[in-house]
Every structure is written in C-alpha cells, then in structure tokens.
Amino acid sequence: MHRPEGGNRHRAPHRRRADPASAGAGASGTTTKEDGWRCSVHTGSGRIWSRHGKLLTRALADAAEVARELPDCVLDGELLAVTDAGEISFGRLQTRAGRGPKPGADFTVHIAVFDVLAIGDRTDLRPRPYRERRAQLLDLLEGGPPRVRPVPVTTDVGEAMGWVGALGGVEGIL
Image (tube, rainbow, N blue to C red; front, side, top):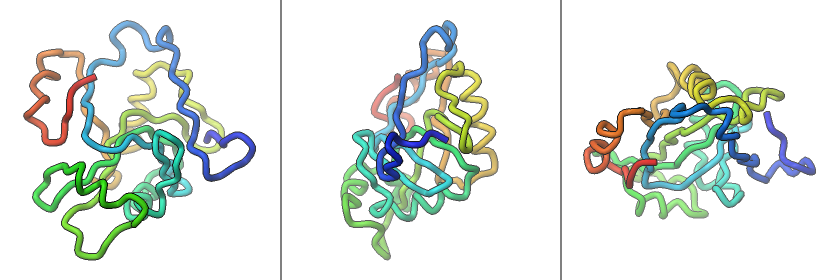
C-alpha cells in the first residue's frame, strides 16, 4: 500500500497517472462519469479522501465501514448518494459535507470504483497496464459489498453513448 509522504496518515494517497504507453492502444476503453465526489479509499484503514486530499472518513463513516469489508487496497473512485428508490442524487451527497450519516436518511453512500492503485503494503499497481489493474479490481470486488462496485467499461463507443441518460447519475462518458 502507498504510504503518504512524511507518515501523515491524514493525506490522500497520491494519484500518479499511469504511463499511457504502459496501457497499450485502446486498453482503457470508455467508462462513465458519475455524478458524485471523486475519492481515494484505503480499505484496510477505512479512510476516504476527496480528490483534494481532504479526509472524509467521519462524514462518510458508513461507506468507510463497508469499504473495510474488502481486502487491503487503495481504490480510486466516486462517492454516490443512492436513494431508497435507486436514484443517484448529488444534492443528497452534499448534505453529508462535514456531518456524517443521519439516522433515517433516505439514501446510502456507494462507491463506484474506476481503478485500484495499490494492494496490501507493498504492491503499487499504478505503473502496470490498465488492463491488468482492471482485472485486479474486478477480482477484489467480486463477492464484495454491493455498495462498492466497479464502473462499467467498454471499447464499444455506441454502447457507451447509450449509457448517457439511460443509467441514472451518469453525467457523461470518458
């Protein structure tokens, strides 16, 4: 697992971009852009950070606890507020800022995962090809909690275009 510089346990894991040459042509495919908050999650400690490095674990204690059910790894993803009716609501996610879970809320926070950055204490996956990281991600999430799921990925542009508007909470495709 990546350890933040200086031993500060409250800093987000650094999200170094993988070398495009290591990914191979067309290896990444197209994925969804969800309507939520970008995050990094360390499942072993149950810590969640914003894309700006702000520690969000307290405000998202329920999502952090669910993430701890997975093997020790660092995930790159998006936090989503999913209502009891199954709809994604950015507005409801905003109500969590600095407050934490409220009893009786009509939504739960889910984590839509794009990538796995590290596994365990020493395996940094960022330099590895995306195809390999994606396979590791799918293995890690297999049989895991339903509130932590991989984002869909396809190399079929037509299929990806169909996701826009058809899947709730999808802002676009990448």
